[in-house]
Image (cartoon, rainbow, N blue to C red; front, side):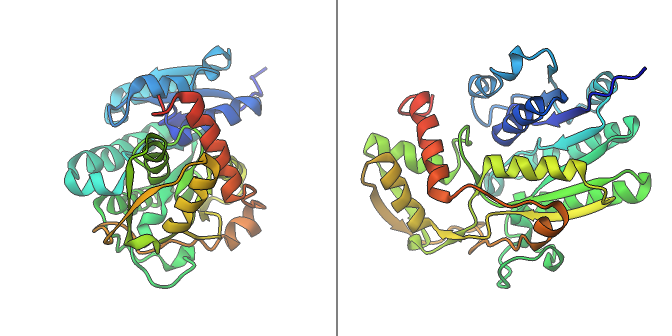
Length: 323
């Protein structure tokens, strides 16, 4: 008799979102394989701590593997035999992609091609982590899934447009089910150190000034990481053969209001320097999550400031600089 335990593979499984997803899947009873290259974009030691609890679970296996190594990835996939592959192995970050776009194309496009081929070899569903960056500076807000025009404003956003196109082509060629989650500004414990909330919080705790771009008027649709994970799990279970959904809070908050909320949860005042809008940053994001509500029964649950408190508690547990 075959083992009825569901099996998943998470690329980027030691990262911010990936490690939270690993924990959730294990808690739900899955067999979980995580693939991570431990890219030096941020310290490998920090990422290994993300998986400290998972590593004690007999249903978990970590593979150090770069998705750009197609042969190695296929071997991992054939060993793990997942029914669902969650692809979260992208090189992230808008501004770094402007300075050095090459690795973004190599990992986010070339690595994805390998992930899709390896997934097809074992007949797995793919859940692809896309980004609100694909909407660029479209002035029609909130963003609806069908309005994406393929006009991003950063190389990172361009790689996500290409990624979605590859996922759709993969579905058309193989007939295997795919889901695309367009993620909006994810935050929470284990957040990447390059993201604004993390950067601002650590500088504020050190008494250092922060730069608030766009004079604090830029709205962002901040989405708590556990809400994002819940949407990803629901996408793995949907009957839809090809589904694209926005995963956001539907409650945009300006970056100025975000700083004020950080001041409250950290108990410190920010030394704030306003700065002009940065090239490559979207002028604003706002997710229309009607489709996720109707098709997945998904609803973001975490209030922004409550989520910031969870983040602040984690940051303090890591030390004043976040470890």
